[in-house]
Image 1 (cartoon, rainbow, N blue to C red):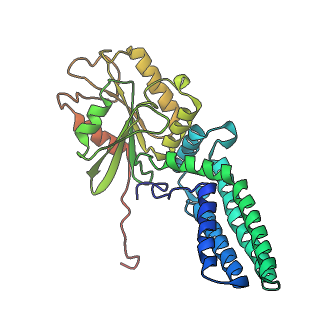
Image 2 (image 1 turned 90 degrees about the vertical axis):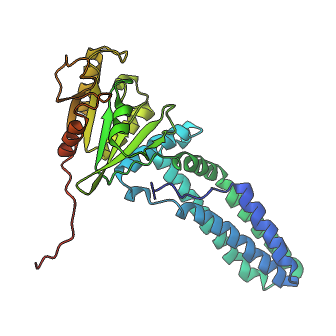
Length: 333
């Protein structure tokens, strides 16, 4: 599984739940007579309502148990996808799920309250009581209609998360546009790079993988996030950068000393300094296009187009990550 939100099922609307519950209840009641028919209808409708609502809540992972990367990123995405300021954020999503779960339990309580009363009356009384129970169940489901809609919106946004795995050693590639980030990622990683977009950006990120010493590393190129000064990011994008802080084990900041990328070198260095201040991991300055210019102080120089020292930069990134593979061992040996 790529991420904890990938397999979330479609969230039904309140109308869909009630239509399904009452139509099936009608069919169930039609197969029986008298009080027994009303009991069957009550049981069928209650089970469908409670099962559908509880399934919505229980299909979600426990947010507090997730890696902080996913919590921060989900918070940003849910905030961006919300249809109103009152629905924003992961804490609000947890409240929506809690209310949906409450409604599922309430439907069961209504059934339990009425099923004993049904058997004590005649057919007409049982029908009236069953109708009362249906009305109360419908009211409960309608109370969480907005909650179901908010959960559905969050689910649709989170299902398309890019495949970034915070438990794998991760190297984030940053720098202004056109400095060679995508070319570098494509050159040093496998051909099956994933190209995807965060829901709140119009640009597409690249996630590539390579192996070194039996360890799989992921390289993440983040256009739309770490390719411009912090003051130019909106609140949602800044929160996504916070999420990347939890995933990153090292950051490569690529520079173009020629300035042909369209951004002066001093601006590129200011972005590098802001990233180094933000991330509490090794941040390596890498001057690309070394075949054209090396007129900048950097930790490493390379030319992706010429293939010059590309592997050296990758080796330096691996060394900066300093990840050790955990191997099983026998304590007695």
